[in-house]
Image 1: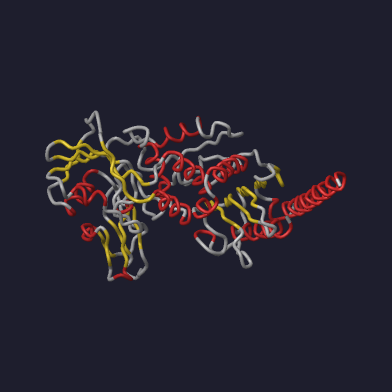
Image 2 (image 1 turned 180 degrees about the horizontal axis):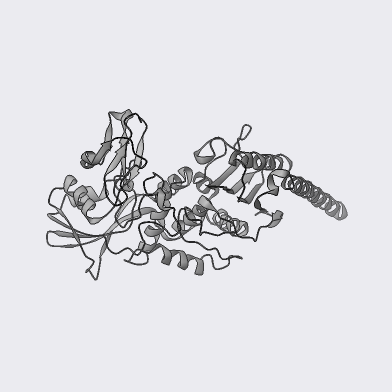
Amino acid sequence: MFKLKYLFLGLIFLLIGCKSAQVSKKITKQLNSSLFNNQFTGLLIYNPKTNDTLFSFNANKYFTPASNTKIFTLYTGLQYLPEKIPAFKYTIKKDTLTVLGTGDPSFLHSYFKDSTALKMFKSYKNIALIINHIKDEKYGPGWAWEDYDTYFSPERSSFPMYGNVLTIDFEKDSTINPNVLKNNIEFKKSNYNRDYYSNHFYYQPNNKKLKEIPMVMDSLLITKLWNYLLPNKVTIKSNSIKKIEHTAYSIPSDSLYKRMMLESDNFLAEQLLILASSTVSDTLNSAMIRQKILETHLEDLKQKPRWVDGSGLSRYNLFTPTSFVQVLSKLYTEIPKDRLFNFFPVGGKLGTLKNWYVGNPTPYIYAKSGTVGNNYSLSGYLITKSGKVLIFSFMNNHYTTKTNDVRKQMQTIFEFIRDNY
């Protein structure tokens, strides 16, 4: 009986080994196809239950990750932020409320519509708002300057309002938000949506689609926005407060993580790192929090990344497939599966993967994509038909073919793994 038991176990391991070899052989054949010849490709597939590497190719090489960077940003938020987002820090002296921004992006945001600050400010005669305690520049290093007027590149700031964008929605009775800027919009043909240095906006008369245009978030605009909301109450002050005693909270943190990941929202990603920094210092500094988490929670990374922003907009970012699999493994170990998978786009169902990697009929890919000119990556979790959960990072740089052609080849590989492992 004892011998039969070990013989049975031996046959199981043999079958698993055969399956692994079959999958590895198929992936190698796919990667040797002509499509992958003229690009730089890296792939790592890992089984967290058995601690086995199913496949590895250029896994320790550095790639431009694009929005795969948001996986590291998600991990940082989960380590530093409480269950609810810190909306702002404050102290009270007589009839004056002194407020220090934390970088919370949800205030009056078109999706979150948080009004925590507005409700609280109404209760005080004077509001002293401090906004100059942020070390981050309004744009990240390596961002394309010509994207200044595009929806995906809002400025970073210490006290965001309205998602730091002007929204024009003709489908909703020509709604303009914030409405106080309606006279700043000129309806005429222009190559740009906004002047570079000022809040003067341009909108095509024949364009009836929703438009989100980044605002210049200087003290003049912030004062104007607050005077519209609470006339003559809010004054911009320099940071001279030595002690901020209290913190107000806004939305559930998980709702911010999910929106950032599903929509690949660059603004939320940038502000999330700023928010994380607010939990360890009154000076907002995303570079500090990136360095801090790399030296603590992520000190065991096999290849330290070059990590310069929260969103992945910068081409200065450099990560390896191994690093992504390591962080995804930490998330898988530390966060309950249902909660964790709820943050990620779902193949064929939700977010940026809605039109790709469709399950038949059950979803099998929960992953974050990253796309920037001539680069496409996908990192996350793959569920096989046998019920195994695999962690992967598939990175493609410098191709000259269409991105959809790359996706199709990746999808072929993923489906084979799903069906045969």
